[in-house]
Length: 161
Image 1 (tube, rainbow, N blue to C red):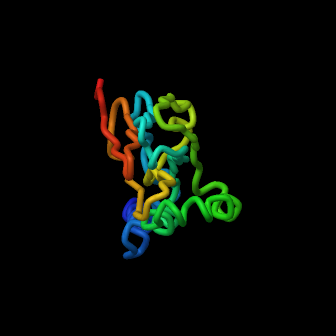
Image 2 (image 1 turned 135 degrees about the vertical axis):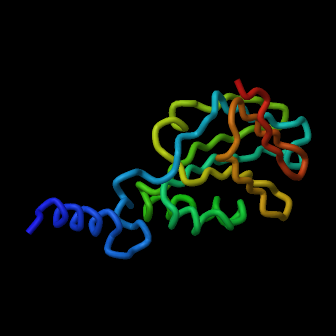
């Protein structure tokens, strides 16, 4: 018997997972990618959140299951459940939080965004007005500016170098 062909057959079945859809490599290569952000600045307009302080969370999701759970939450639901979610999924999500008063600008710590791969990153802003107040931002690159407006917010890149 030709052992070369036997070995090639075994390798083939291992790599293809005996007909599975590539699940053999799942866990070998970590999911997601690193964020391509140079900096993250949060700036509140003078009348932001109807002239009230506002909390902002940048939520980094590290697996698809947790992304599916969080990506459709409103900001109100996120802020009401975030502590429980972090206790339940301590390795699956992380977030950086900031609270600003109208007219304030601050730079978020960059090191937290560079630590782990992300499958999704969402900004939540805890506005007094009704609405979803969330935005997915992981595809953005460069310098991010989260601009808190009167009743909503925007996220733009100010420089992609």
